[in-house]
Every structure is written in structure tokens, then in C-alpha cells.
Length: 177
Image (cartoon, rainbow, N blue to C red; front, side, top):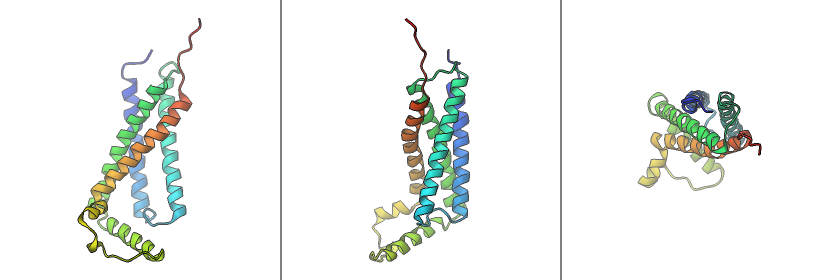
């Protein structure tokens, strides 16, 4: 039988852990200049780390829930647990990233724009100054857009990776007839 507040206790705990690790990771990669550099190998390694982090956090959360719920969890409950963890973790990471690029590292967006222009020149694309961009395109270079894209990517990861982890770890009550 499920404890009354077990579900909320687990997703709050693991959502907070996931969000804080994500914020620390974003801060470190931004401060070290690793993020947004345009290097393919670094991008792949970054994706592998974040996907592995999500997989690990979701697995640990389901394990904790199962241990406190007579080793039982359904696919739906596991998926819901992982989505709530992703929601909390994504919100924390998005707010942390927004604070970082809006108030701490004011040149972050400019460095990203410069890296994009440099890559465009290397690939032989036309060179345009950021001032020549249409107004709606400038929105994609704001801290708000960056924070929103961080949140969206965490939710998308929770949807995919959370469902996989929930499917792997589901265990229903066995009925003997």
C-alpha cells in the first residue's frame, strides 16, 4: 500500500537535487567557456552528461519510491514521478541559467552570437551584423529565450528518458488466481 505523501516527497527531493546539479553544471560550463563554443565533441559530451544525469536521477527516484512502496510501481506512476522531477529540475535550472546570463555574466549572449558568426564565416555563409536582423529574430538572442529553451529541453528529456526509465523499472502487484 502506498504511503500518503511518498510520491510528493520523492519528486520534491529528487527534483531539487536534479535542478541544483543542473544549475551547477550550467554555471561551470559557462564560466569555463565550454558551453556554446561550437565544438562538436564538446557538444556530444555535454549531451551525454545531461542525458546520463537525467537517467540516473530518474532511476534513483524510482528506486527510492519502490523501496518505500513494497517494491511496487506502475508505468504511469513512474512516468508521473519522472515528469514531476523534470518539471521541478527544469524550473530550477532555467531560473538559475536566467539569473546567470541576466545578472552575473552579461557578455554570455554576445559570446554566443560571436561564435555563431564565426561558424557562419567558416562555413562560407553570408556575414550579417546582429543589427541587421529582423526584430522577431532578436528575441532568440535574449536571456528569456535561453532560459525557456533550457526548460523546454529538460521537459523533453523528462518525457523521453523518464518514460524509458519508468518502463524499465515498472513492477506491478502479481495476482495469483
